[in-house]
Image: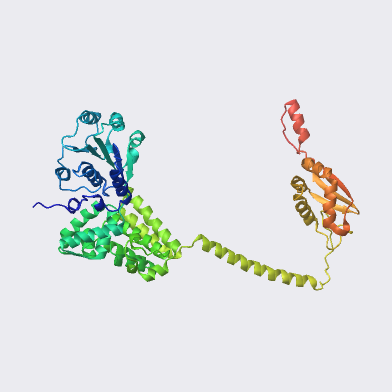
Length: 530
């Protein structure tokens, strides 16, 4: 008997054998048993998850001699012909090679003829998204109102490329990726049927590499069986396929911890010389640091990790923080994107490995903020000590100074201010702050005051000439100003307000201005000026 690949040998023959697609299976079985047969179905999803197999099972269920039934017998001539692919009433068309409108017109002519020996005439069009726009338009009317014996089953991996007018005329079923645990279980069944031995880690690696596609897992398993003799181990897979093992990547992490850049570059070179491609090496490192990040977050589910949690070095897990692992993961993701356009992939890898060595010195924003707060606290404590010593020096008697006493040039303190009254600078700030809650606009005008003085009961506020609008605004609010100024000055509360506008200083006349004016009038020339 000719050799048959595992993917073909293990192709599902009934709905119950279609694993990982419970929603699709349940809905199709219920619709068949209820007699609610649609005239068009659209199966969409990733490659290798059972779309074409489900289409063939549905065709057998509809044309089985005991049907329509959700459990086709597989023994009647109709079921056997469909399984072999030579049924005259189940036509499989490759959409990738029959894309023209003429191919669709041929289908429109054929649907006019009744099935030869079956209940339904079924068209299975795989990769239907490859049809041209004109072909879809030619098929619209046929899909919408086909003869009662016609059923269309479309399968595609890119449902977004199918026109909405076609999708709206079909019952849509979305197929999902198959979980790694379920894929591993199916691989174990194949290994047991063949009488071979296989490590769990080896089957787990195959399941992860398949990325949810059972067909890809079966294909990879056939390749692994070919070079593994009768025992499949992860070491053999690493050796033959050029895969980096967990022990080797753990050593890379330990070298990073040690901080030896020379050893890291030499060890990377040693691994690449064994035949491992740079791209595969980067993928393995990316998955490793991703798994470390998950473990650091308390996630130990095997399906989410690239290796079992026990295989990762405890020293590495404890050493790196989550922020450092996130940074490392970002480095390798960026490297993987850049490899396609790199002048030399190995140079890019070596540069990234050097950056990984600096992870130990990485400071997170939270740590920076914490350090700033610590320094600020130290500065505040030292300033408090300094201010206390300053007060102590002020309270002590001062020696007589031989220097003459000179009054302050601007805004001298009046004699009638009490020692507790605010200083000239503070009064305006206190007054503006007090007024802001009640009249924000007035507070803004107070900030324009250039200087102030208090003579007896008269509070004088001086404004510059360019601030006349603010001065007039303050003058119109005399009662408010006097009320808040009285609360601030307490015992020296003023009862009158005086607004003064300072005249702008006259600009200095330019030297030789008169001589220049005479020169311009008589259009002369200055020969000598003194």
